[in-house]
Image 1: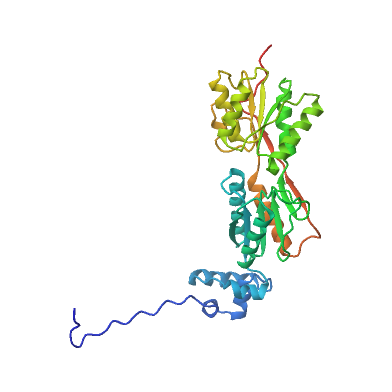
Image 2: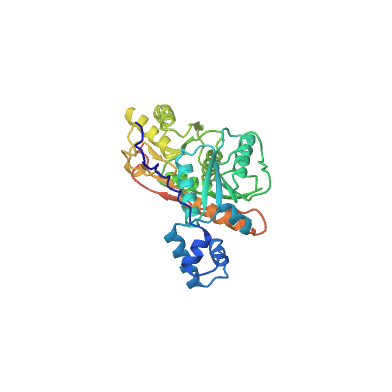
Length: 348
């Protein structure tokens, strides 16, 4: 449609500019250098001035430039996280705790999935995060199948969560052996002659630790160790193993390496007419939120994944700040939660 004579062409509105450090300084009545010191969390600013600057930042919506801040502090304000499978319950809970702790410390988190459980895949993910300018990296459940000891490029601090580091890097782990010992000892204490074990995958660091502790606890108690069964952490694999266990009348107690497999075992036992816990006691590991609502509320080992994630961030920030003199290994204690899925064995 033709424009009428004398009509004005609408002027484009100027793009709104982000508030600058000078804008914050003017509102707070301080110098730009003071705003910079507050933005970089320097200590040489008195409390009242800091509060005034922070209030001006919030009112104006000012965000410090991360690149400029890195030039001043040598830090980017970002942590990297690598994991093979973030969908697994424990990994997801650990990652959520890491994110919460990082946010409370005013840090960002970049996640990178490793495509395979190999040293090469982890190193590739590591390099991707390095390009994104992270201050440190956390690896979750880092079992590396093709190398006995993972070696990563130097340059940023590294913390392992629930993984076999070869003692090269700082590590935060739940005491898998103690959790297993408590579960197996609980079943033996109820009077069961032995405890069958449905282990996790052979290539899992956590599964190996639990299987080793199961065998050791039976041996120390003078109980015979039955044949070991393997699953893949899923309820379906627990169901398949449970069908085999249900056909063995000598089975009166089962320790499953996680709660999902315990659920599958319980389903198979029920279909075979074997009651839990009257005929067979079942324990799990993890204490997922649904464990208390299984048909027979599940006795299980509670892992504090929140504590693991937060402890990882604490250790990483210490490493970023200069470290404490060498790799450290930290352990989080598990808790046995006794519910209705375990009981004394049936009378002979």
